Image 1: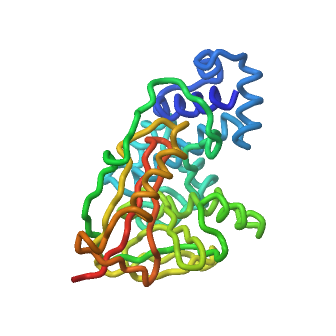
Image 2: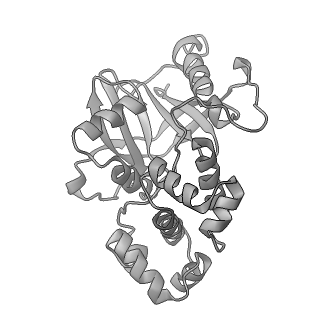
Length: 291
């Protein structure tokens, strides 16, 4: 049933601007409305109605943040009958009016698309993209000077253990993910990094971006720097673990940097890792020292 609920989640995002009803969703995955509603709440921790509303508001917020659009146009686009109704719902969700948000771009707890399958390696429908190691794409790229806003934890070396320990300390991981995703930057969502002693998770932002200190994020200015990017060309969700291991093995173990004239700069992190289950992507960035 988890696979069907994930299919429902994918369908919701693909039709987020349309009229979405429980009947349409249940018909799509082939279960009764009652069973669909109950299992959705069980696997996601949210009611369907609340999830759809918050996804619409989150996508609307990103458009208001990144595009020069009118609030009323965004309100109608995401199914609100008036700007007043949109403003009320926006404020209830994020404790800020959309007009003020456009001006300040203050961090807000966006709701990211749910993923109820990860990290379980479940069979999925469709054709599997078979990938050989030599097909992993390696490119040289550069990022401009920016601020990195992050959380840090020693003694863990991966995303799952990082957030598991954060939850043990009483952190609201969904809230923190949403806050990071709301920060405008080169990358859409938060991402992780390996350090000498543990793991960090954060988000790039403009140099002058200010985050509310109540979230206890750390900050670091990252200078303009070149990176080697190791990217998997594509995979199905069920193949995520395989794709991750392939990229990590090439980037962190087998690639001969010295032979190719590159020197790793591990003064802050050893590598950044980026993943996205919505579009099934995974890549690692290795920071390089300037020649």
